[in-house]
Length: 326
Ligand code: MLT
Image (cartoon, rainbow, N blue to C red; front, side, top):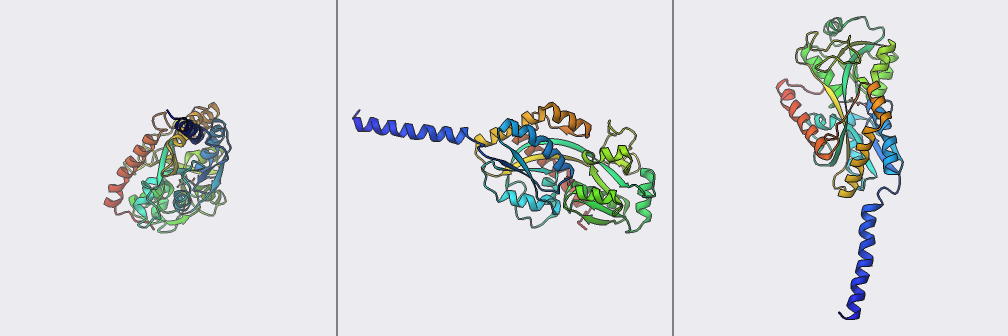
C-alpha cells in the first residue's frame, strides 16, 4: 500500500475513533436539568427531588430541578419539546401526558410525537381531601355536600387536562353538579390554599396528602383508586360510597425531547433504573404511598405502553360522558 494511503487511513482512524468514543463516552459532562412542569411542593416535584439525587450519583453529574408550572404541565412540556435533544434537558411528567391531548385542541406539541419516553418512574393513588373545617365528616356526607351546594364548592386542581382536574370533572359528572374549578400551577399550591382554608376540596396524589391526613390537617374522605390503600386502610374508595366504577390513579414518567441519541437514552434509562432501586428512594416512596415502577416499566417501551394505555382508557369514556373542560 502506498505510504500516503497508509498515512491517510491511520489519520482517519485516529480522528474517527476518539470522536466516536467521545460521543458515547462523555455524556453527561455538565449539569442535567430535570423540568417539573408543575409548581414546587407538589407530588411531581417531590418525586423528582427524590430520584434526582441517586440519578446524579449514577450519572456523575448534578441533576437539578426546574419547576415550570401551569396549564396541567403543558407550559413546561412545551419548553422541553423545543429544547435540544442532547440529554441535558429531561422532564418528569404525570399521566397528564396522555389526557392533556384529549382536552386541548391546539397544544403546541404532540404529547406522543414531541418526546422521547425514557421510563415510568412511579404510580400513586389519589385522595379526595377537604379543608379541615369543611362540614362533612365522611365521604358520603362530602358527596351530599357537593350535591347540595349547587356550584358553590371550590375545587383546586393543576389546570385542565391532568389527573387532579380529571378527578374533579368525573365527580361533577357523576353527581351532576358543577363545582368552581380553581386552577393552580400545580397541586402543591392548591394544597397550601386548602390548608389555609381558601378552597374546599382537592383530589391530590397520596404522595403529598398522606402526612396531612395522618396529622389531621385536612379532612380525608376517600381514595380514588379501585382498592383501599394499605397505608390508609380506613379510607373508603369512591366506588364504595356510591360512585360505582370510579377509578383514577397517577403515574409519573421520565421524558426527553424527541431525537435523543441512543447512547444518551441508554445512559439516562440506566441511571433511572439505579435510582428506583436506591434503598432511600424505596423507603421514602413507601412512606408516601408511592410505588416505584418495575424494571420493565422503567424503560422507553414501558412508558410508551403506559401512556398509550392511558389514552385508550380515557378517550372513549371522556367522549361518551361528554366530559368537557370547565
Ligand atoms: C402536581 O405535581 O402538581 C400534580 O402532579 C399535578 C396533578 O396531579 O395534576
